[in-house]
Amino acid sequence: MCFSSLIESFCPTLCTCIFHGGSDGNGIRTVLCNNPDMFDIPNGIPTDTVRLRVEKTAVRRIPARAFSYLPDLFYLRVSYSAVGAIDLAALAGLEALRDLRLDGNLLTSFPWEALQAAPRLHTLSLRNNRLVNVPAEAARCLHNLTYLDISSNKLTTLPSELVDIWLPFSGATRALRSTQKVVLGR
Image (cartoon, rainbow, N blue to C red; front, side, top):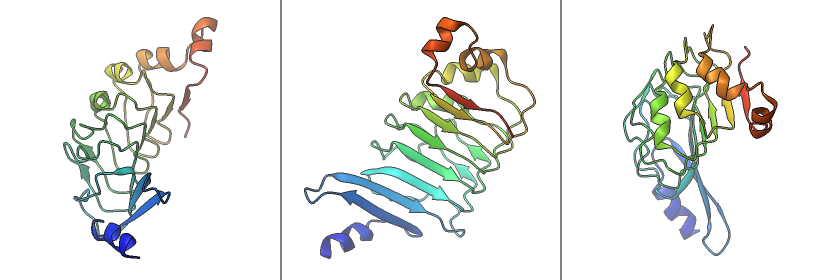
């Protein structure tokens, strides 16, 4: 009982912290922040957090180094909020990040270069935003991805550089990329 109250005491206001683990103390921490009265990415998230979900909030921007003190974070979801801007250095320090989901926000553009701070990223979902284009340079930042969802945006065309890495038509390349999935539809 005392242990669980100790864990909760370090949880940010308007968030819930859950520790999934064994009696040996090994495990993973998930933090869920889903309060419509939350206007900023919370500070003070426990440093051993591996899964962070900020959902259905009034958060409007993700600032530089917002999560840099979370070196073990491998799943980040900031969805169905009011995010309209992401700083170029927002993902700095997230070298373990594998899954980034920014669905249902107000993004009209995305700082693709920011993905270079997350070299292990495999999943990127930008579904249901207001993206109007994907620049050709974005393709340089997507090589490690196995799943990209850019559906339900305002995209009308994609740069050939993106099409070349995600929709290969040669048999040899297709075999190498058989585990990749891209979602483009509405």
